[in-house]
Length: 153
Image (cartoon, rainbow, N blue to C red):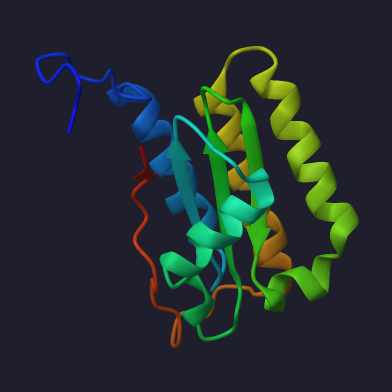
């Protein structure tokens, strides 16, 4: 129950920012059999961001991709936390150093207060890695997960 039911929550991103992120997801997935999802919420309470990202990853059933090549970009805007959680198929091929670099670059853009651009750039970079290790195959590829941003609380 909301304490002030007449007060509407401001959307985390405007329409243009949403479009930028979804466009990046679709662009990234055009070149790979891998999947990328973005989950954004206001707060990450009582957890480390990577633990929350893992929880979200499994609750969205992202581990069910055929080649275990799904990646979740997790952001808690008000708490200024973020994480990237990669399934074992892509993680084993890229290694921890790669994911540390992706997160560091996203933090750099976030420090400029451009969250949508930071997420979109991160998604494109992940798409490049997925393309390298899991290239698109016209005859067998299918979009296994939705491309829309998932918004939490």
